[in-house]
Image: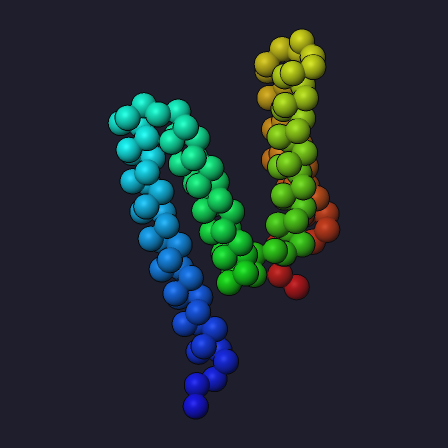
Amino acid sequence: MVNSETTFARRVSRWVLWLGIAYIITGFGLLVSILTGSLDLIVAALGSILLLVVFSLGTVVYREGLVTPENKVIAVCVLAAMGLLFGLTTYTRLPDELIFGAVFVVGVIVPHLAANRLGYGTQP
């Protein structure tokens, strides 16, 4: 009798195989779209790549359990830094050095300090 863990591993392996095949087909489609110069095909290929990346990340998170409290803090800070970069470059006339400094602080320094303060990544 096959246990559920083995069945799950087989299903995931098939899923990863089909995902790999989809990447190859999408890559071929992107190559054809670039060679023909068709903007519609390029947009379709890029949309397909975006979907494949989302499915791949979902698979990795589901299989590996990458959602930890430390990763949540880092993700929030990185998203805030990206929003800050977009907002400051679009709506202000601040010098680039100041903008990138602020983004560095929010995206790198703050998550590091927060992780240390909250005790993430330290062994008991």
